[in-house]
Image (tube, rainbow, N blue to C red):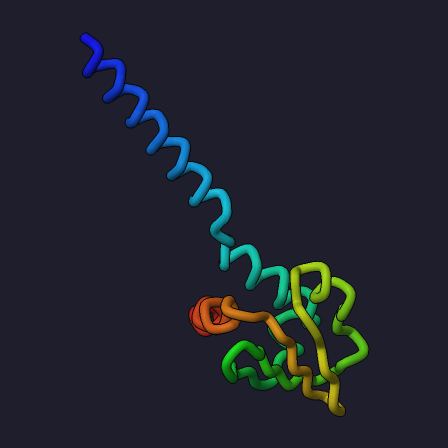
Length: 104
């Protein structure tokens, strides 16, 4: 009977651990959609690419880009040169690019 209690405790602990891990994963669909909106919509995006942890995007009109919103999403920095933005997203940059590729 004691073994059953230990097994139940172990199973509950594993379920809690899995729930914690899943809750910490980012939803890249949601993040990508927020990023597209912050960049002025997909019609404002001319070209984009990823270089290591940076998401580099060329936009038609940089004035409609919400840099504050991008910062709130967790960007570690944004460099603007003319109509090109280099957004430091960290390890999530490639996953976000892959999702955006499916939208274009």
